Image 1 (cartoon, helix red, strand yellow):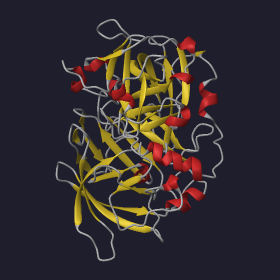
Image 2 (cartoon, rainbow, N blue to C red):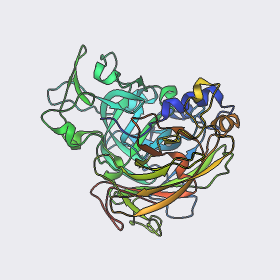
Image 3 (cartoon, helix red, strand yellow):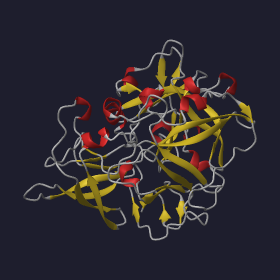
Image 4 (cartoon, rainbow, N blue to C red):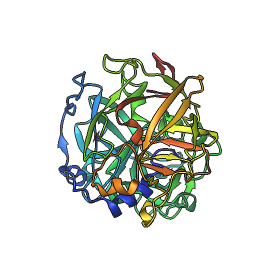
Length: 429
């Protein structure tokens, strides 16, 4: 159970800490999260920058993150968690928005103890703990249940993960082998994460069967953990699929930015596709994906001096990746800094082309830019639309990370959901 979301988190985060001269944000997530609990009704809804309806819109921001993080190309929003069925709630900002994963994950260190979110047990009566693995690390913590408010939407009694909240329970080696434990603000790069990708649950049928995989859900005692099977409705859920109405997908809308970058970018996370006046597909073209990984096909020619053969790659769109990632050995990589290892540093900015093709055979020719990463980080900005890194995977992947979102509205439809553009999963832009 390794997600595509946040594939570049640790590498890019290390570079940002090492090279960014940016100043701390005006509002720090850690301070806001620890302001305490309050008894409240339905959380207030911020106005949509586009002037459209607000009930299905949550503001999002790209900034430097919580104090000390110095994040780069990280999309954040604010989430309110409530004890199910009550008005005992806590609002937490700087929650990372990830279209490449599913589920809400909140750092245990930021939760007020008085919130007292109920924690379901495994089938054998022991505490239920999850290992959620990314390409660069993992979250380890118990499953809890919360009412999740975001924008004007509510998902009631949602299974979420409390990252880092498992106490002294030993972490199984098949979890810790995934890399770095990302259960602190500095390691995660935010106060939590909300996965709003195409999946309805974070593991699905694989974890619900008689032979569940290692590195997912566990039944734990104080001394050991055993792999556990868990029915899909009890797994950590994509909250969007549990909304009353706007539950078939999302759209992320960010403005275009200067090639030199921007200190802060404000946009909108819009819930639903074709369910309200502000979330229609319009002229966006639909690229259907496979139902297992959310992949389509990207055709890309390396930009060598003599031209290169077109390569057929596995493509995906992921707001949780801080950079484009593509295999192109002809673009010079940065040198002189271990933190920028693998990032591209061309002598001048490049405008490149690739073609994305869905399983429905719809193709979109898409241009993108690649600039020298060492110059971008030296600017002190938090948002860049031309940051790119070499594909460190097994080869053959093209990751359309957050730089791809600037200046676009990108739709992501949930698997099996009916929309005006057909049945999900798909991306559209």
